View 1 (cartoon, rainbow, N blue to C red):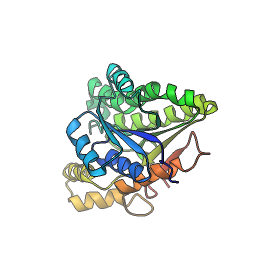
View 2 (view 1 turned 60 degrees about the vertical axis):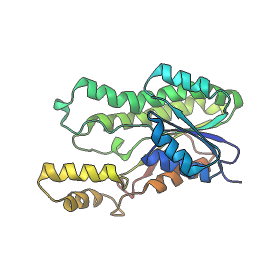
View 3 (view 1 turned 60 degrees about the horizontal axis):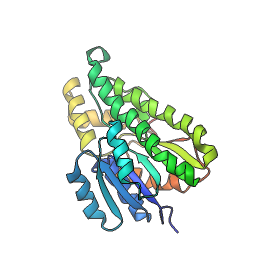
Length: 252
């Protein structure tokens, strides 16, 4: 029996990137997957790729009322796996140039969104005495990343939320962990390298090499590796309150 068989997993930010990869891995592991995101179109595209045992729900996880409505719509589902993946990168600028509303937007999605989802979907888990919550943090919460203070601060907050919540609900049989990916191959990092190359007056390749060479393995991780890591974490029932590093040794 695979780790997801007979279980329902809810993945936020599931319409693209890491969320889509995590949804694919959980579906392959036998779980019924509820894919949540702000825009329905990409959610349906992922659902069509996966096939059966997939449900799509549009929701802005930073909005309390929307999350409450989502939980009400999913009252017929026994969600025993919650993956809080929804997040935004926020501004790339020195702290003194970042506006308060930019700072608040990052925390609203990256931190308040995780809090609201946990708050809404924990009670049924506690009642049943079983459940897994995996919060997507980042190695950027544990090491400096120039000109990215809101993002880094929000990801460290996710790690703090995880460790404390694990102690709060552990006695009820709920496991809470965070996964901290390093830089992930894809369009987002390609854009970051282009911006860094422009800022430093270097080539795209030089900007990429300078970043990747900070890791022990001299490479980035892939979206599928992140999805596989989520499934692997679910296969470790004795782990809770942990932050798992998946960064090719970026913080080694």
